[in-house]
Image (spheres, rainbow, N blue to C red):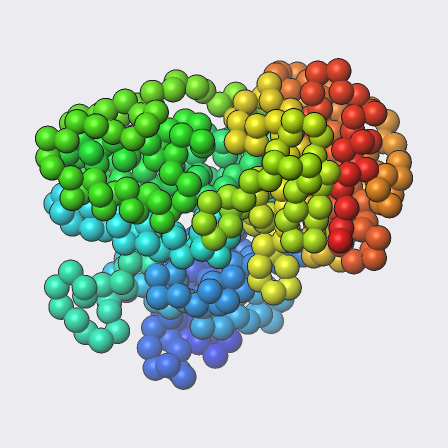
Length: 455
């Protein structure tokens, strides 16, 4: 690949890396008189408006958060051929992947590093952002700006907020929403709700990679075992809770024998969840929601149990016995950079992500989607390749004109229903994906849609 001489006002020095959707160059910023990393959208995606917008999502989000534990964005721009680029702070210390390739870290250094990674992820969780792709390659190091020496000489940075997976989904590709080996089981289910507990799984896997067989005490091993439990409900709620548990475990006596509820005690780095429940993937070719999920709020995910549930302006009347969880549509951002509202409603919202026998529905509201496509167009972007579609129908429920597409599918979820319609003011698109309970046909779906309102 031939390096360009300049990208905007920045002189290009060398190639740093390439990926499926972007190329990263080392450049020189004349205003800052220092190095920067310049991330450029790959040329083969330059004409896909959805991919271009998703590429900019990450830059806008990092710019809005502007935190020392996250890779900072200095500027965004556009090449003469129309491709967007983002100018990022240069991580001169490389990545955790580079360091692990040189050999294992000492246990104290590994534990301290895991704490700092969790602190960075906690910043995202406090802003209702789910990373979804925590890997050694996305953990970067930068020299401290004040020239400090010793352990504090470097800053640990969280990079690449998992939006490459959203890019793939926006392009109609089948994409796993994470990296195998670090990806939570529910991320491999196209109908799963992905929240902060998926990042807790990634933190646990990073901990196991950092410590290997050198887990210093059963208490630390038990924390990692709980973090990497197969079922989201068995994990810590978010990165803050994981970090606190890790700190307690590190401070615990070396001969501690007790572990958290629901987790078998682990010794010598071996770990296992006390519940051996395996996530079952819906239908072989289901690709509807590969990068779609619900994000948790600043603390634990909000749970609603009394008749109705709300996320921002979206209100859902719950079917009898159903509950709700979630405060935002993971990977879907509004003009202010915040997540657009969404909920999971189900008799058991936590299990709906991984247990195909549990009915439920995803409900989301998106102004950005309404600006780029119609209800019909949005549903057309969500094919179910292995399923047999019923004729598309239209129904007016709850003041919304819905377009409804039902699919009969192989596997444990025999029926999946997609529905979309413009809200009353026609500035935002309502979207529902439902898995009805056994025997719940059109009447159940219409009753559910009738209970979806925008206040």
